[in-house]
Image 1 (cartoon, rainbow, N blue to C red):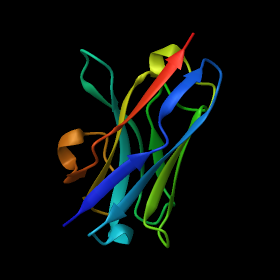
Image 2: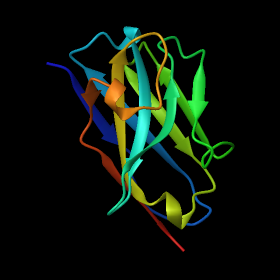
Image 3: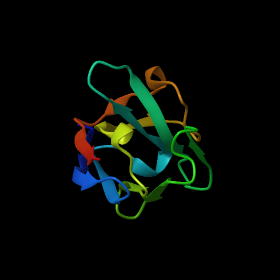
Image 4: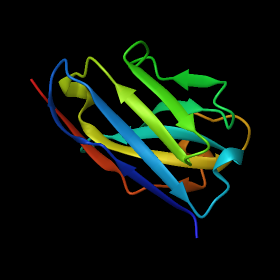
Length: 124
């Protein structure tokens, strides 16, 4: 059974950094495009970043461009999100998602597999 498990969330001060990980099991990781989404309390789930199955193509939401970097290690079945220059408005639960396709998508409905999320809290 496919499973995605996020880790690396926590409490950090504004301007700080965190590195999220998403470990995949029970699926052929290398044929899945992957993505990060986030959801703040009372708000919709928002697209953050996506990466193609090879890792050669990435896409970012405007509000994270230049601060966050998505990457993957297909040998370790793991995806990462390096988050720098964090702001209080980045506070949310961060979810990883997978879909069996070459490229990712900004639409949450396009993803088949989801993790349970990891909380990121940025204090001012």
